[in-house]
Image 1 (cartoon, rainbow, N blue to C red):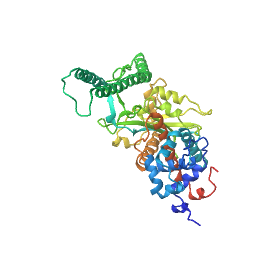
Image 2: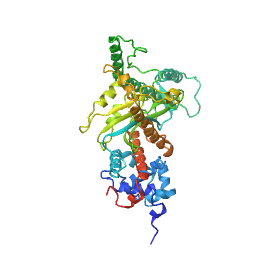
Image 3: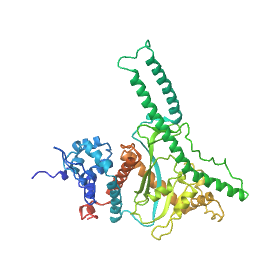
Image 4: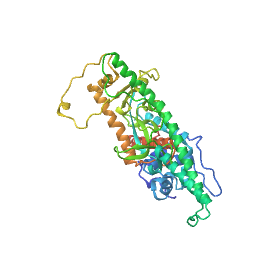
Length: 455
């Protein structure tokens, strides 16, 4: 008898777990490659397992995954010693967004069945992290520079037209012609004009999104004046629907954004990968992609994107970047399946990492704020009590390690696909790969060897 390839890797290896898991998933409706002259057709279960295992083990490019089917023993076992080419792998990943969304839910159902995750009255920690886009920031142009470049191109085109009319003008270098050079500059000008139009449209959308926050701050300051209090800080600035001079658009991936990364002087072309994890299992239960470097408007959409496997939320933990009175009010008004609405616990101000001596002293819980207290006072009280502080500590202990594992252990720091829709698809693949990787050590070898929970 020929050797059993499955014995080439340890019994409790991640590849075995993923292979067993995907065999229990419903892959009906998956889009597969069409068999051509002499080309093989690959089953969706195998392709799905190949993608999940590759992302779990830090191989993300389709060419890298193809290579691993030759030089990785675990991948060869998972593929049954077949070798899908990189075009087939890329097409399967790109065309099966619906399947990946369905499998993401299946993975959470699996976690609930084997008892490693609760689905009712859960506490979810939400945050976002910047992930580099598959585009260079040097391929971007600002609104101001686009306008300046268009003016320079107009002057160059006029100069070329004048040169064409002059019989005794200095000839161009060999291989260059005036008509070709004019056409090249007109094409470049058209791209710059399209970029400026896109940035103008974005400015209108941005102003509309910021208006709710502006009206909220304005109303809050008016209420303070009516109570005889003097509002602190400067007056809120009305949103401007005109693009700023530094607004940018990238020609390689127009839907990505220039964002500050690692300080105020370092900027990269990126997306914001949003995620929320259940605190006990540290499994991702909500995920989405955002283009906004500011999280003020992200809370409601993150909660809306919660996977339907989660039946109800008891507590939501967020940092100060998500705090918005309107957003928190909307989230806390929700009732799922007749349960009580969730409570949002957030830091309303930044605290120093170093604690002074007085911070170490035992304190009594402060009295609850008056009913007429403003939003900031009420939110601050939630983390001022001992119970509130203990709950809020779980945010940092839950979601930040999740991003750490994805970026450091899995090595995912840059998207392979371009465009928000495709990037969201890839983020779903990353999150479900993380979840299966996370579930694997929590399930005993004995449980895996016995009848699977999904059978």
